[in-house]
Length: 87
Image (cartoon, rainbow, N blue to C red; front, side, top):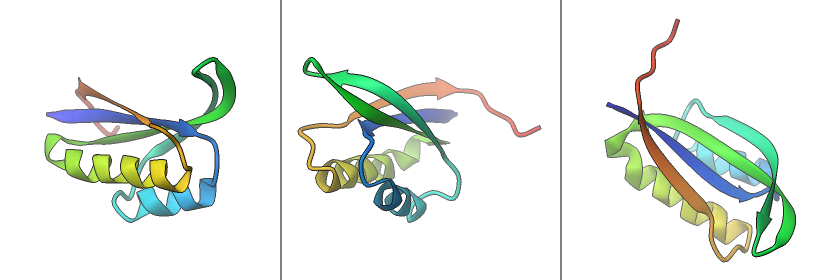
């Protein structure tokens, strides 16, 4: 079964974020958005990855690296089971 992983992070250092994700995955989506963290508005990114359950270690590693580069207290990682197909 495929999983949809979403990493929510602050919109900073986009070229570095892309290089981090590129090292692990050949395809993903980055959505520029706006969020609130602890009552403070910020430009945000959602990184969507469709992968397998076995890829969770890679996704967590990416999340931790982004958190470090962006100097954040936390990034949010969500996971959802999905069915997908290329058409």
